[in-house]
Image 1: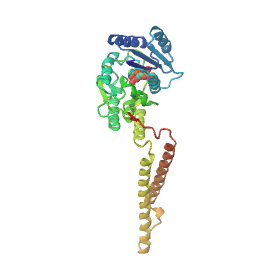
Image 2: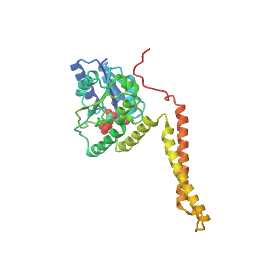
Image 3: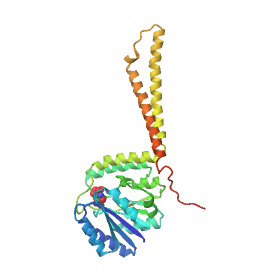
Image 4: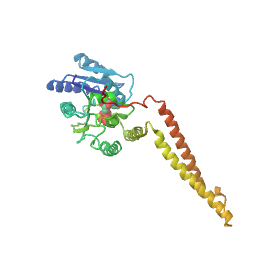
Length: 317
Ligand code: UDP
Ligand code: MG
């Protein structure tokens, strides 16, 4: 099979028939063998009924129905697990992404040898409250992930080589960072393609402004995981030792100064009268705690089934 189109959907009943008809048309025109995986993320409207009808009408349309709403990432993950096509394309259900881009994306993966091609909604039809924070979000993501050529991490329209989606695990709200996940798994031939974007025709957006707060926190998590996931002590140990060292030296200085003044006959006060003493003490306590956090982290990774999981691309025997 050439192409699997994975579509996560949550309350998008009105858009679905139009979307699927459009995908079918593009596939027929280009003679692709394909499947459309509609992942119903616990919709409370008629979406699942519509998916059933579409499946009746065309065998290539397949559906999965979550019992409750889990989120876009779990929906994508479920689609990725089932996808059989050589190229996997993800697309939002709200008709903001255009299926006309599919042939070009397919060719970039198959002919140009990219692992992942991400859409770039260069000209967006979204409210300003969304486009401005998005610019900031993408700049941060570029910096942290080291994928310098992407302008639009969170674009719903992306194409993957099948290998990629079988080797990454999208979870939580990590759909925003699939390119980063792919890069961490060793798939670093990542490209971008300017894609058409349209205003939402039916229904409403499912994400509020909290997407930016959560997105930022997720980015830190991914960065930490990629860098220190199996060696947390390298992070906490360094920080802890540094804090403890600063505290210890400061304590010694405060105590030493008092002893010096005592023996040389200068006026002196109790060390507990000095604010520096308390700062030094706090620093030592924090240092110890960070260090212990590092030890706990090491104990946890030691028991993790992931600790010796490596992405192997080829092997000669
Ligand atoms: N979506 C989903 N589960 C959710 C929220 C969203 O499957 O909990 C789907 C939604 O139906 C749509 C896609 O994710 O197909 C993108 O959502 P939306 O268009 O609301 O996001 P925006 O375009 O505003 O970024
Ligand atoms: Mg949308």
